[in-house]
Amino acid sequence: MDSKTEKEIVIKRLKEKGYLLTSQREYILNLIIKNDRHLTIKDICNLVEDPTIGQSTVYRAIKLFLSLDILRKINFGENDYYELSLENKHNHHHLICSECGKIIEVGFDYLDELENKVYEDYGFVVKNHTLRFCGICKECTMKRSDDAKT
Amino acid sequence: MDSKTEKEIVIKRLKEKGYLLTSQREYILNLIIKNDRHLTIKDICNLVEDPTIGQSTVYRAIKLFLSLDILRKINFGENDYYELSLENKHNHHHLICSECGKIIEVGFDYLDELENKVYEDYGFVVKNHTLRFCGICKECTMKRSDDAKT
DNA sequence: ACAACTAGTGATAATCAATGTCAATGATTA
DNA sequence: TAATCATTGACATTGATTATCACTAGTTGT
Image 1 (cartoon, chains in turn red, green, blue, purple):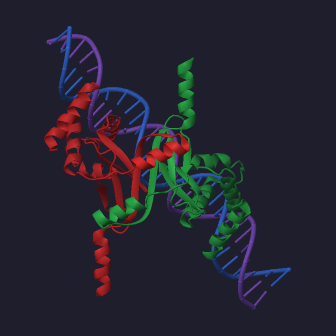
Image 2 (cartoon, rainbow over the protein chains, first blue to last red; image 1 turned 120 degrees about the horizontal axis):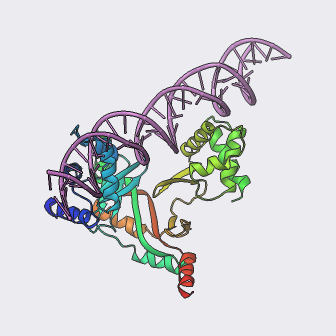
């Protein structure tokens, strides 16, 4: 999915609810698309180098994008991160490296069985889920073993 | 595990690091043990009815308990909740009802297979995980079908 | 018992992210 | 073009958390 298509989706979602794609919203959106990773609000504010865009506008745009499901908020430890919510990745998981802080997205899901069990045992109907694994990523494991050699 | 034992564990953890179990810390701890569920900071502050305990002390005690792994912080949606971290429930999951907001703890784990797959596919060594399911709890499902009948 | 020392506390002030206000701006429609 | 309405930027405000600092309580050494 290229960024042109992404922008079209965004415009569609805005228009559907009567919102406009203003130059400020477009600017902020481009930032997020270009830096396609998990960003904090601070990251986004820092990336907005255009001094004519006020911070209220940044906050408002993020809030709007959240409400339109253009962005999605995820909480890792102390921070809230925002990621694009345009693709169908509701059921991906996250690996968080406690060494370097990197966040890796996992492509598979495999929680159906568990969700069935939750329904059988608790009568709880699952609509959505969040799964994150904390640990050490491949690179940091390798770096560790390299360091041990020297 | 009764609350006497819980308090003993807490005292041990405090003493180990040179902290004291002051009357304020004991008061706050008792509150949390007595209300054994997921509490927000606000909840805790409201539960502290003793006007001689300042809010700084509440914040400090919670921070201290977190650092000593007496409490654990969990983020659900907009709120941070605190729960006792004394038992071995690192691998329990949470069900969050989007209707009534109730948080249910799930006793089983069943993520070993997934963790193995994460290691095989990504070389990521899992140390810990968080899994939460959002959906509708049994009671709310029943209430819904009752409402539909009338 | 006494002085010296230290951790802990409460009141208050300070900070910082986030939100509200409001007049000005820009786009859209009639 | 005039009217309308969403959006914006600057600024004020809020609210949660943290920092400061003098004071207290408890501990240690003599």
